[in-house]
Image (cartoon, rainbow, N blue to C red; front, side):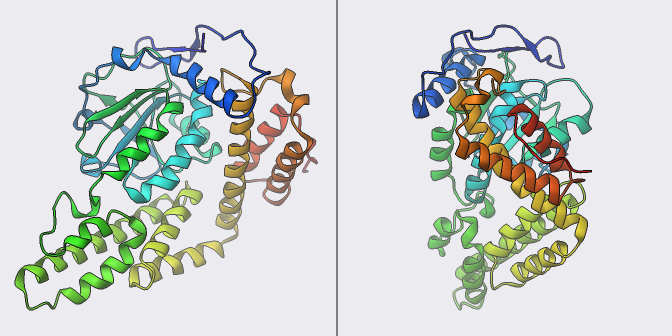
Length: 378
């Protein structure tokens, strides 16, 4: 039986009900990963026992804690991946790097990822935990889904398509395939539900954030079209793309003090997506200026290394057969020397180069968990 975390009355408690007692040490590679995913799927009921009639329109995002700020309009015409999790739930913590990977890869294609904290505790503890895991997607607390409270364990994932239909409910470790399919059918969110009749190629082009700059350049030239309908659609595209780029820059600036890694990631996306446009130039200039600031530079560089460290740790936890998101102490000696050297090098780099960063504290915890020999820093 998999480890489960019980939901009592709000807020949810991180109470371990059952531990899986059968070791998976003999399983390796994909077999172990598959088995762990299957076990963690047991954190909630089978999919057919959930209310699949819930919709994205029923999501109340609650209170913002970190990551991009969201309002109801941000969820319209976008696939949404919502995970209920908790800082005192080891399987939840183990799932976060995976969700961050999906966010990094699929957000430019329209996916909105939300981590809804569902346990008690101070907000700053939640923010700190998310940051230590390298999370840059939206983290909220007190989120609800209308008629969606029919589950008793976390982590619990809900995936909605761009029309708001629920496609999946269950373990976050099993949601990737469905999430990838969801973004393939999503229309261009930047068009706010409008289908262009004249500039039909833009309906597909603007599904990919990385092509915004090219789309903006082309649409700008078409604003002077002699065909009134074409010119109107082009002006609409220019307006929507410009507003989107500006919103992303403003979001990055507001997040910079508390979330340097997430803020830098957003600016880099704007710089890449709007390359050759004033918006891209502005984002690239801001990012260069930020990187000249010692404090920002330290947190940003440390955060990048921590993200790599947490991904490596997550892979080890998966392969170990752990069912509670922690690495078993009795398997530390079995970590391959090459992997241990790689982990040690990353931890040492973070702790020696950026000893006072938020990432250094998280790196030291990983070193202690995996018995890594890291030089002490005065």
